[in-house]
Length: 400
Image (cartoon, rainbow, N blue to C red; front, side):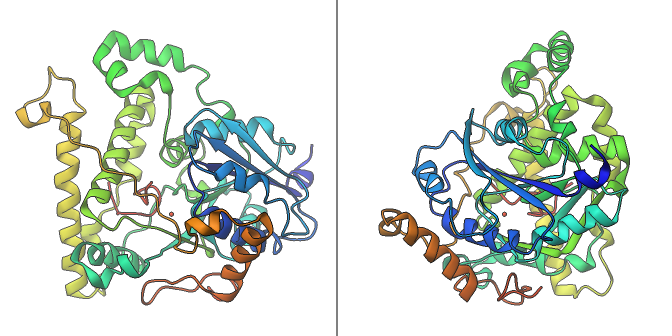
């Protein structure tokens, strides 16, 4: 298949795990974004239910209408885990050689998001991954003005233009030129696990290395930079999405714990990529622009101190017991609750409504702008002209 034919198709894959409250609105925003892709692009949409315990699958199987371009729509199942879902999507897609876009099921997609990501891949042959610009969504209960910690996080998001650029992408919404990195993932996993087992069996047992990579954006960013260089990953400002950032210290810890643990796992399994993590993915926030207001700079510095303290504690706990120096590291931290949130438009009574009501209400909320946002954020979609976890690789808290 030639390059022209490859860039005339698009697979959109969306892993789903207990997203019943977010799906109607997320789906509606996806419909609007698909309608703005070039007319020559053939589109297939695959939702993959993985480990759901709610009504997500029931809702999805009734959402087969709402767009003139949603004819090729299917719902599949996989083992629990986001990357298991992504591998299943890749295996079940019809367009085997074309670009593939992965999006989270709990985001709102700007109307031009897909078109902008697709255009970047079309216009720039050196770009292997184009990813969306994210803006945080705060509902009334988590408005950053209501408590100190969300205000620290809001400083990070609101002053990103003053901060150093990033060389990795987040997993909220990204588009890959092809899926071979996912298809080839784990081909030599047994050999890699055996090597770590010889080094120290503790790591294999406690970090479940036999499961392979677990966090898509961290693993794929490392692999793509190793193969294609840092310029192969490009953020597209015109592709905007809304996501839920962490709003409590517990949520923030959960994000850091998830990220630091995955980096440790990948460093053990793929040591050849460890230098990339250290050299290219650390953002020197101490070098933030001099034009950043001093008060906001102090907030960002405080956020860095909180993050560094958590990271040191987590990293100590990820060391083999024979290497630990701090006795506190022998005590496991209690993992935080999930950070999963909906956009506040879906209630228990709404979930029992008919499929038509689900779709119509979702489309109405996206088209009329019922979604609330934090102060000063760029608009998304028709009413906006311009993401368990928002994490460092999901444009959440700015981490190393």
